Amino acid sequence: MKRPIVIAGVVLIATGLTGGVYYARQSSPDGQVVTKPITRGDIVKTVSATGTLEAVKTVQVGTQVSGTVAALFADFNSVVHNGQVVARLEPDLFQSQVEQARANLIKSEADLERFRVAVDDAKTKLARAQQLWDNKLIPKTELEAAEVNTRSADAQLRSAEAQVTQSRAALNQTQVNLDKIVITSPIDGVVIARNVDVGQTVAASLQAPTLFEIAADLTKMQVKASIGEADVGNIRAGQTVTFQVDAFPGQTFTGTVSQVRLNPVVEQNVVTYAGIINVRNTDLKLRPGMTAMLNIEVARRENVLSAPNAALQFRPTTEMLSALGLPAAAAAARAPLGAGQTASQAGNRAGNRAAQDGTRAASENIGRLWKDSNGQLGPIPVRLGMTDGVYTELLSSNIQEGTNIVTNVLEGATTRRATAATNRTVGNPLMGVQPGPSGRFGAGVNRGAAGGAGVNRGAAGGGGRP
Image 1: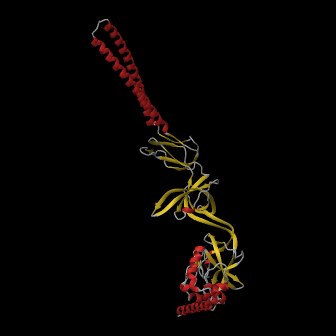
Image 2: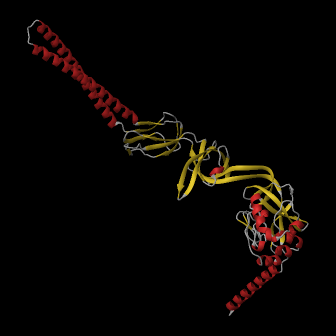
Image 3: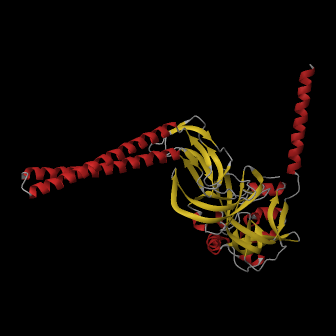
């Protein structure tokens, strides 16, 4: 019996709390206006990209001959210098080839000497035969035979000389191969990869196997970034780049764009271009292969007036303003934008021209802010400049630094009912005011690129009702 009673008590308590919360929300006072002041500062427009850190110069050290690794004199992270021995292959096979080539050279030189003697003998016999022929002591056929023997011996001598040259070249080649078993570093740098171990056989056939990878100077690195085709037109050499890596999440590194390569990279029908960013790495924190999240600064405005994008996105409805007790401003909420118009003038404009006004505002980059002055809301048309996604530059002179502008309305009971009764539209703060149904600008909940809490929701600011 006790358990059903406890359950019933819990249900009654929960029901009472739910009803109390609902009654409190329904009986809460009308909405509260949230404002922020116009500020002065810098606005930076950036392009986001990702890339991979690389050494500026990386050399792959391989071997031109096949053999077994006999010894390694460098390992990962070893600092090496130009000409320093980093590995050696087994020399036995190459030494035997050198000895064989040297023996062939000696044999060829001996054959050369033998043919030289034969040539001298043939020339002597030819001279004797010529004298006997001159004295008519031998037939002419013997003289002709002596001449043939002399020419044949001379040809054999030249062949022997060529054989000596060939044997000497073979000896030199085997000697070069023997020298190649000692592998040295071609540059000063740091070993970032070792791909072999002692006792491993490497085969150099069509492609030389890579034994080591050596980075020239890790104090100077570069980021190879993938830049989308929609952003590549804004990237120029010399632009400042900031980036972060996962290894140091709280630290920001800087670099400079040095090149945007023309060669396109197409992956899954997405076109990107490689951008090279030079980075100084004096503290050696950055390492090859790290993924960098980059922000490339493409434009900057310094010491300018700016307004939050949430304020430019704010679009009060007539029902909302009436619920707030602001009937004079309610008419202005429906009026189209016009440079220099007052709130009363805006309220007298016809609502049926709203669509045409939205098009003009978009082409002239005109937006509207709402000024909060002693509890009264009034629209202020402003000309917009550059935006960084959170703040937008104000180019108009009809608004001053410190002016409180409306960014949000926290709903109360009346304003919540007024909001629910209206249609909803989505506007772009940089495209002027977008017309809603029946020629009315804005209605219901506003969703902005950088909205805030409460009625206005943004993709990049706070969000949702409090």
